[in-house]
Image 1 (cartoon, rainbow, N blue to C red):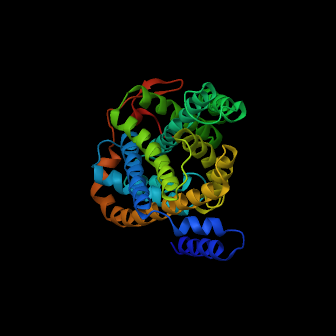
Image 2 (image 1 turned 60 degrees about the horizontal axis):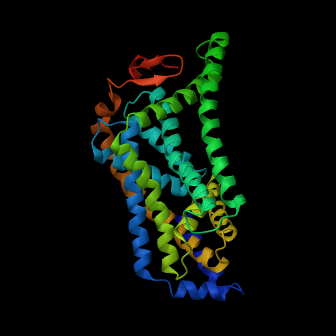
Image 3 (image 1 turned 135 degrees about the vertical axis):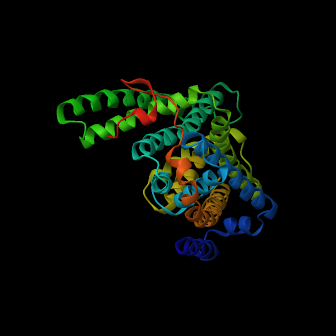
Length: 342
């Protein structure tokens, strides 16, 4: 939390003192507090969507309270730890393992969860890119900014699913040659099984999962929408969405909370889509402040409660989904507790 406060102070000092930023200072001085508050509420609603998805993917037999505590703790970890979401998943894995969930299930479902939470982003790029290209949505129709991202996003889905199937076969061959305990074989089979479980969960059409995945993304993008309103210059909604979806790729740069990578990625993407530098910078910095501070505060509270709750929920978590069947490459439909530890 201390580095977050230091970052806020640094940004305020730079905006206040650096020459040439007078227009940006003016925008911040006239920011609408109502829209800023709406942005904070939208961020909380995005977190609720994350919890719904977490509950559906990892363990439906525990109380919603424990899913909320783990989910918000993960979001808090993502705000202060590096590399697009893996810090939060690591914290969630620790909590589930401490409560007794088998390590192989945690690994598979972590892969599935990462894949599932990426699906709405990819679909959003495909839909918005094609829609902008043919004029369904208002905004640029430049093929390099519409069709190209849509094609790349669609190809990424195909490559991921195809790569998972390849990994499954490669893992089986590696296990046959080097033994079931081969680490490479374990990793390859876990990746393959995780993607297949994600697809199986999608085919199950769980409304809670669908609502969680959609809400997690929708409300987060609308935080950005609220920030543009807060500072008085609002691009088209399609521009806000596609700029967000592509700009967030900067979060893959390994710095705490994606600070710097996400900011530059978002600002740069909005510039490509015709948003002015002043408007983009004001909205993005305000968005990032909310995206870091709200999850960090809620996550700290949730983690404090979580440590007390794990012992009470250990039995429910360790025996999670005892009768659930999933589809595993090369194995067909099997029960997770029938899959030997690898």
